[in-house]
Length: 485
Ligand SMILES: *Cc1c(COP(=O)(O)O)cnc(C)c1O
Image (cartoon, rainbow, N blue to C red; front, side):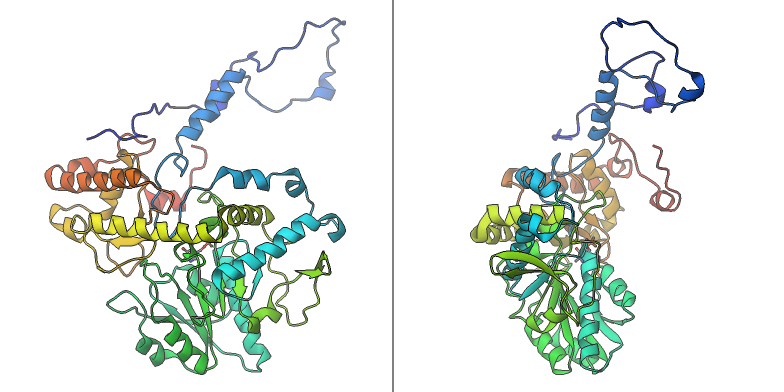
């Protein structure tokens, strides 16, 4: 095996700090005492916490070693499809930690938080412009929360028309959060299959759309990495029956500033700032899932909203049809600052370029690995491509075996077994931030693994051997998590 970066470092076993501690060891030294010593009153002092006695170097090594057991975009390529694990420039973190932002209390009066309010006001406009929508709320805390907010907006819209509806159309390629968000809003989801090209057909929607259907949730680009080319016609059908079109825009990284969602019939959509707009993610948050809407849904947006009165920014709750608050205060503001900083530092031209590069990189991988891996839908993709383990069937090697072996080459595995419509799916999203050299190394690693599968499959069955943990029993890990180590 060719040695790759990231596979040869020391991975040291690291005990708990409690096991490392030695009585009397100390992390600091004080000058010699020049006053009489007086024993502390035991009663007053009590037992005290059971902290281990450690030196400074004990502590620094402990945490540095633990950090090395981790893998992130700062360590190497992380081609996790659907998740957009791209590199987030550090300057955006720096802007978010500027004292004026970081120390702004959400309960300060608007007169003392003009900077934050202006940032929010402008970011709402930028996001509306990037998506081709009319207005934005920054309150939702994540993508799924944005979906729920969108469902509540659709619900409020139908209520205002005097008739409530009971169903929502959700395609089979949707992220699992889509039907869950619809259900939270009491909608019954109506599943629709995508066609042989991996996208929605106009006929399939025409068949199920009726006057008891509140709308449709379309993921665009979808989770097979394809652009939903029939969006505008589908929207026409849904609108004709009084329904609305929700777009799951978690994959906006492929089309920033390129697709005018409003023009292709989208009424409401969410974005994942923690995927597309420079917030690192994967560790559980915080995230942000702003929702952009067309004019007809603006009256229902969550309050308070930031409005500009003359040259001042104020918070207004004066929207009688609003669905109310969906998050404490103003959402996860720290994440929105990073998005603001990212958009300002990139500029319109470079946001488009980033999307184009993300699409180019994914197509490069698709073309380079086609034949090595089975490509169920052989057509140009957007920001990600989906293969399967079909060609490895005869070698008795599965997607999981290849993914585990990839770790020994220094790469985070791609998304596996999703989307569900592809059996044994391997979903690769390189993102725009990878260089051609790194992508070539990844392609080479995959090719090497596929030939190992033929010649020496034990290498795959045993993988990963050099990682901190081997193959986890994922079911037990989820059911009985052992968080102590
Ligand atoms: C990530 C993702 C979501 C959910 O976003 P969260 O922030 O994890 O709630 C929804 N839809 C798609 C297509 C996604 O990729």
